[in-house]
Length: 293
Image (cartoon, rainbow, N blue to C red; front, side, top):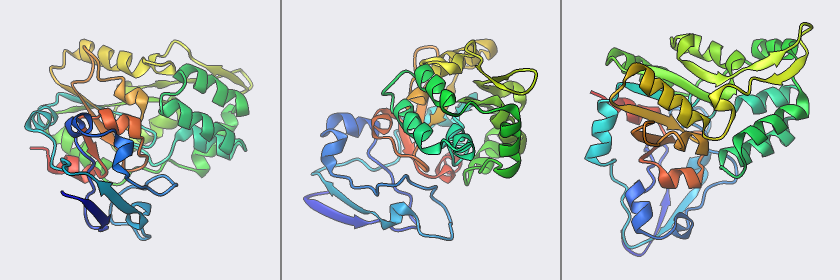
């Protein structure tokens, strides 16, 4: 590309951001003057109402930008993965589970602000988790009522992707900072064994009153997803493991002994700091399906 290019996104196209290598070799991400709408992205696919992404004007100033498919090395790792670990909120599901539960309990806005800070890596995850729960202290009956009235919304294309991975002999895990009580219905829908869930656990008293959360779970603290992924890899001696998610805690999983590859899923939320460090950025799970054997 040369000079100033003004693009209006075609809803039938998949939009790709520059590769990780391009981010590092060119100007900082913010200097590309990529303008997004203020609201979060929705999932790309065949939807009935226009996408926010389609409504945005994408203005890019650069003399050279790599918008090609990921490198051959990245694709080789993806296609040979023994296991794939998925974040749940804003990845496997369209919503942030704790935000939805808080909204159901009347504390949505205050909790959502803490979630944004946690997912962008601004504050330690355990601090954000405790602060969010303290704002509404959900009882067991509230959680059960919430799950009945607001069942989880699965992201478009994720069921097809997980089915394809399992057909190829790839094991699938859910590694989440969310709560097991809310993730088990998602796992059941997608055919993922409960023992493949690594998540937090809400604690309740004999009368169903909120007591807190299990701080012994690795995903209850910063760096916890990296620890969980390392545990998964060591327990099963996987040679190649991939992490897919949207937040800073997902990116942390790409550490020695953890994930070999981090794929940023930006079909729901675009987090600039996370996208900048990703090995591959996708807005549509169909792209991952199409690049499997």
